[in-house]
Length: 138
Image 1 (cartoon, rainbow, N blue to C red):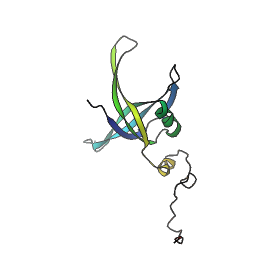
Image 2 (spheres, rainbow, N blue to C red):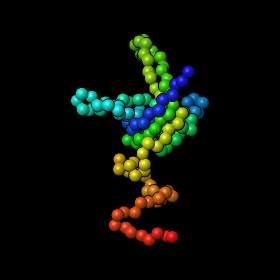
Image 3 (cartoon, rainbow, N blue to C red):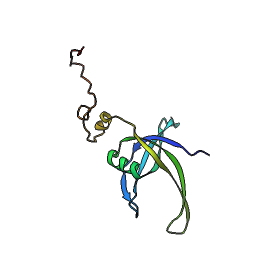
């Protein structure tokens, strides 16, 4: 049997971090995932997929992701049966995340309005502008 799902989309809201009664971290968020095809109107439909992450993955998502950030989620699909307040039987589908990866660069994130360090500040490389010329060190 196989139950594996990989999604790439943008967070629709900031992740929520909670703790279970035993202190286990759990984070929930929703990904907006555009479909690959367009409708007859020329528009792309979007699916809004609920994701739940546990333990270290939950803490990672809560710390580094925010609304609008692109994320790649690897996990499994879970269907839950539950009863609503009126006694009706309901079903919910959600993805249980095993791994969550960054789907965009820090440069793209800062364009979305989220504050982040520049690549030079965090030990990465920084591109020179077209008007900046430098000599090669060799």
